[in-house]
Length: 109
Image (cartoon, rainbow, N blue to C red; front, side):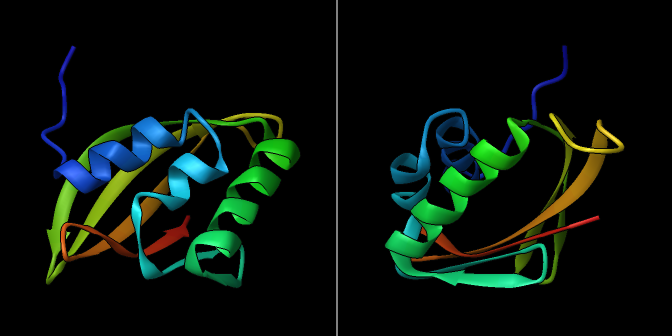
């Protein structure tokens, strides 16, 4: 099986994503943001709440498939399966890193 060589903060995010909202929030800078489903979630509390809501709503599993760089961002094509119409799907997780952690994450089709 091929293993991706993800930058450490991104690898930590996917590990935390199997846990809970608090674990995911710790992967971000204090001023970090997540953009998902047309909404922006800023700061640790909102990011933790977003993750908890996504777990409840979709009961999903995300598995990174491919990594590319686009300027200063890392785009991880991710196979996502769960309790939602059209599952499974591949989504683009676009990460911006700063100070050794995640500054921004945007999830899009």
